[in-house]
Image 1 (cartoon, rainbow, N blue to C red):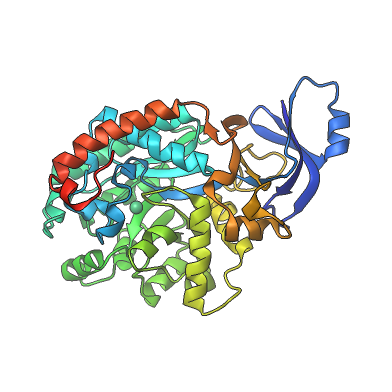
Image 2 (cartoon, protein in one colour):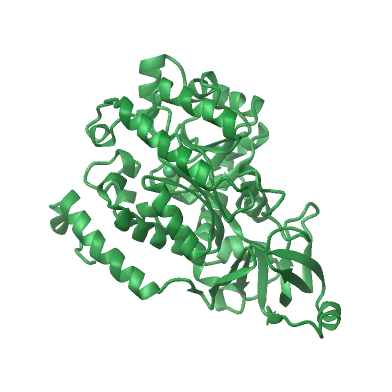
Length: 452
Ligand SMILES: [Zn+2]
């Protein structure tokens, strides 16, 4: 049993309660009581339990990061400037170039970063998903995993050419099914979903197969949707319709759909999503760095559930919250909308809803799983704190995360990821990155400052 006491608790429950001088009692992996700190400490004084003071700190529901490719942490700091998603980009290391062991290391790196910055749940989609899931088990992060399913050959895409390989699609789909079978317990810390990569990298036949599996397994479907001009043009050229229309025709637009990006969505596509309860994952940082941004305000007005994902790169949900707020206000020409509270909602309870886990995670409520983030407000840049949510979204840094609890287990403490040796992980990642980058991009050391 574990008691957190004396902090500010930002619950994100239905009434959006924020409690001061409160306490939470955690038994095994669930929150069993929330109340005044004094009363709870008194009631449990004879119980054998750990007590952690959260004085000067605020406790939030763990952030739900609904779209990430942890192993793509290998392209950090370079891919952001190449103008295309890494999978479409020549000269960067690709998932298919990584061995199982290498993919494990970079999944560990990406997920450890996400966890350290407060993501208690990640929805990870990439090559080698079965191996990547092992990395998430090691860390203790909650994860919804899926294989990156496609039947267009990525190495040809980099040359602007769509070449289909039917057997590739079947093999990847089979891997995704193996994940669904292995992680079939909906109460497990690791669960699985379906991961068709995008409307242009999956043929209609493959999308139809995914749709059939979706009817059978009833799990989230994570995909990229209206991510790039290349995708829009390709789908239009081949089918004469929009990406969303294609997915709808294949039976994939429903409450399970989590379409990431959505920066090129037309009004009629948003209408299709809205009518069928499809969902959008906003990628504020990744998109802004590529010079585009999704029309979140309009999507919200059309009733879409919007969550936030970090995609590749830093995996920092606090930074992404700020990007979502800033980009939203620029688009809206509005100095108050979206609000920090609304952005926090997207990062917690709406993310949980996107993954169909909102009855278990996404808010601090009795009976829910203990997935929590403790932020240290005893910092120069967070002083004074008049609005705890405002301070987090406007001013917070990833390093302000002091403690992370997943499923009742403390997995980050004093800002350190506990279940791994961080130094060893960084050493392994640097060693592999050097090999892979030199292989993928031999001219690298002439273009960039060459430091591993
Ligand atoms: Zn992505």
